[in-house]
Amino acid sequence: MKNLFPFLFFMLLIAIMNVYTTVAQVVWEPVNLPDSTKTYSIDFDSTGRCYIITEYGVYFSDDRINWQQTSLTKPLGTLYVNENNTVYAGGYELWRSFDRGITWDSIFYYPWSGISSIITLGDSVILLGGMRGLFRYSESTGEWTHLFDTYNVEIFYDFARNSEGTLFCGSIAFQTTFSPGGIRRSFDNGLTWEMSNLDYYFVSSLAINSNDELYAGARGQYYTGESGVFKSDDGGDTWYKVFNSRLISKLDINQYDEISIGCDDQGPPGGGIFYSSDNGFSWNEITNNLYTDNIRLLKYSPESYLFVTTRFDDSLFRSQTVVDIGNSVDNVSGIYAALFPNPATDILTISIDNNVELCVLKITNLASGKQIVKDVFYPEGKIIKEDVSSLAAGVYLLSITNDKGQTLVRKFIKY
Image 1 (cartoon, rainbow, N blue to C red):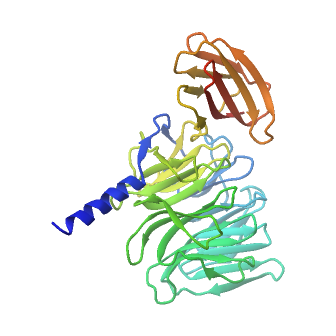
Image 2 (tube, helix red, strand yellow; image 1 turned 90 degrees about the vertical axis):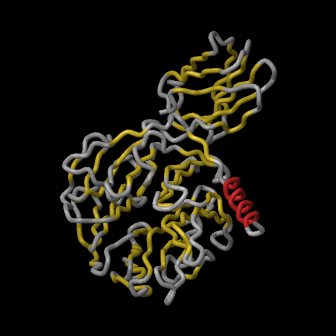
């Protein structure tokens, strides 16, 4: 009985650390693909073109409905589209397309286990990760360099780069003979690497937000088994946990610094898809109508639609709406409003969930801070319809102040 109390206290503490709710408006729909139901990797270019790898090679689509198979039909595992819209596809070879997937060239042979991660610095430096360590290509020398060899006991799953040019690479070490695994970082464009204080963790995914805050998804830890999402505010010097006790398959951050993670259900307390709009302080579960909580891949589109694949069958799904730009920014108790559709093109409908005799509505451009609209309404039936057709495409803040001086601020997207 003496040993039972510490155990129960520990379990209660874990439960308090992450309280999840469900965001009911996120609905998932299958993405219908020609010839194939399996999706092994997904990425987008700056125009919104979507690229996927299937068992029949690389496809692309500009509307995510009509898909075109490219000339690259080999078995592959990972995709990467850089800032120049150059597309890289990796398997046992690295393929590159300068014309958005129309033609491809093989530029490197990786015979050991296949390429699991890719990042580039423009097109002049290419870094690859796999079971045999890291490889680096430099256009200035025209040569590939094997930076270090991990002898098939460590696999490098993901790269990230912050605004200062520091590179990060996450890995899983199956043995600790040569390296503890975790996160390495490089300050010299990938020439040399050092460990970054998350040793022995099974790091499967990395992402960086606009404030250079680094997030790492872990599937466990070599000695303790601890998993979850960790965050560093100081470039990888120190870390703290922001999401607890799930096996993280993939995490991604959109242009509004909203985070989504996909989890594997192979360990307690299960898998699922979770979302945070406050830098990981709180999380909402958005798995909803998806038939399984066993998630393998997760990727935001440029418009913040979320694409996921499920583990084992590799089926591709998409959220019907963006996730979830409509979250409240600032809420003074006593007033609540829902916005739809969000994103909006012509008319933005605001539903007010309490009795308001008069309200002042303001719309501010989030990027510039400039107030665009100011209107006074006497709501009829708790509904306001605001014409936003003249607004430029972008992200806006809508504030509503009622006759009691209470204010609610919400974000919305104008297409």
